[in-house]
Length: 419
Image (cartoon, rainbow, N blue to C red; front, side, top):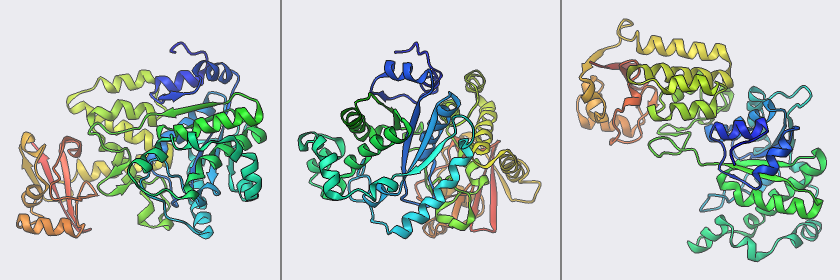
């Protein structure tokens, strides 16, 4: 289906969010007058990362199209641990850890959603109803609507069984709890849509089916494709770890990224990813994005800078994005003038140069052996990102405005300039 009537379905499909939908025509019809939809976020860490940004942007689009977005914090389901896409059980968290994580991830949503106005976003915690359900009561209400036959055909369960990997009975209950969330949200807020990633399709469709059985109403499920980079890597994962959305230093370095680091992440995008990332992660119009996609050669750096500006402004605000860009320009374009040692390297040599050779060429290591020791000690960085392997290479995305910055520790820096 391509000729949608609703702003919601038109925007989601044109910008590349659609992968699966339980009933496209039905959802399109319902969304014309505004639909309430939700996405659940389990509280497994004190910050969400870029992997969750696709879901957050869908809630943003839902609200901008006239719908009401519900942010469902998984205070209850986190106690179980979603087995979807996992080959082993998640670490069990204490109530204090879950509460602290909830406090950390709440902060992000106010940047993307409006919690005031006629279709104000709603934030709710599924612990509000799951914690009060007695086990026997839950089994009688929900357990009778599921069969073991169907459960063992779900991708996560099936994969665990085929690989002879254990799945606890606790995890086996997760789809029941997530499905019941849809029932409760339908009752409380007339919610008729659950959105999520493709790994949630099984959980979403069981929720759609359970809500139909228990409430006698058709509701809808919508999933996004797995977002990968042009190189085939997982979106939001770097050699330096996950790209966290929280910039609060109080959470510690393990779960935060500063506005500058966040800006750099987007600026380092592969040339082939710029258009796709603009559609998914910015509010730029499709017409404007098309002009940036048409850029090539050195002009692609203009597009990458625009992507970094817009993505960072959404999360951290325009002032922080402008400050990050200024810092980057001063560091890279003006690096030589500021006294950083600069070595000229032929462009075709720099693009693809091994990291060991790059460190030696930049004068940050006397030999490949010393460069290896820097890497082993997590001291060597490229454009502020820690080098994880001695097999790493400098690639086109690392060369910003003709320059790549190498660092050892916090005080030793040097530039390699493409000529």
